[in-house]
Image (cartoon, rainbow, N blue to C red):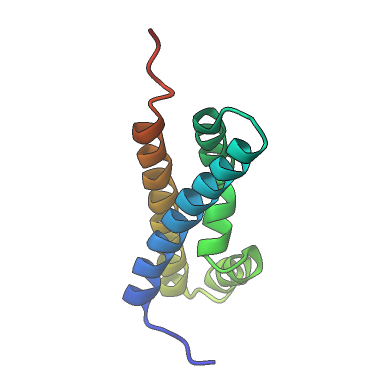
Length: 112
């Protein structure tokens, strides 16, 4: 399998995390509607719960990230360590953006 460059991986990790949060929350909302649960509350709750899984999915699993950190620390390969940190930050941003969009759509944070 061919290794992709840093910038495509950076952009991909953002949008993968965004898609996992949005897609998982909205599909979970459909499931809660079909089972008679409140869909907007479920969508909001799922968006909070799916953030960590979106990050893990975006960085390609935890073992690659741990191996990259190990190589960066013990082999003094700080360039790869810095790239991995930026990819994780990109995934964090994508997951946070997805949760924010869900928060705006459901308006669960507004109390009357």
